[in-house]
Image 1 (cartoon, rainbow, N blue to C red):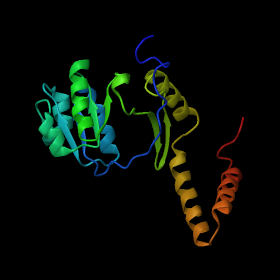
Image 2 (cartoon, helix red, strand yellow):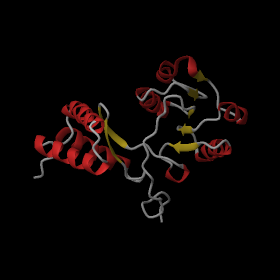
Image 3 (cartoon, rainbow, N blue to C red):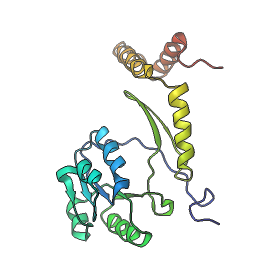
Image 4 (cartoon, rainbow, N blue to C red):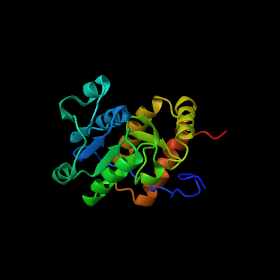
Amino acid sequence: MEAGSPHDVPYMFPLVLNVTALPVMLIGGVGIISRIAALEEYGATALHIFANEPDHELVASAGPRLQMRWPDARDFHEIRPKLVFISDTDDTHAAALRAEAHAVGALVHVHDRVPLCDIHMPARIRRGHLQVTVSTDGTAAGLARHIREYLENHVFGPEWAGRVEEMAAARRQWKLEGLSFVDLGKAVAAFVRERGWLKRP
């Protein structure tokens, strides 16, 4: 059986995480550039970036946070990251870095190395505070991307950012009026139905 095939990959637990002040380490080469951008989009302010031989694009993306070397055990113990992203290194080195990360309690993602991953990044659509994500638990990332593009183009357009704000304002008002949890659920359902936001084919 091929390592990392759908038959030996665990089902992953989906989680939405506040990364604003979370210490995160990014280790590798060009493969971490997209991770830097994604984390910055979500307000991450404690990024620690290590690259042994960074190219110009990575240097520009990382800025003064970049350390031009591989991290060692002392770095892991001083930074104590909660998340570690690794790319552009061989399996043996990635496994060693993963072990250092685990020693300080971090969760690890190794690019395109499913057996070495504790976490995966889903394909995502963001419309304001609405997020729709698609994941294949790391087994078929290309498929997840195509599904995301379909949903982005045909289901969840830019108008959904305003819809979420509208719904949130209504829900806040209902809570002030003292609606119970059950009645809140009914009010939300009626609100969505009356506006035809989720019309069934």
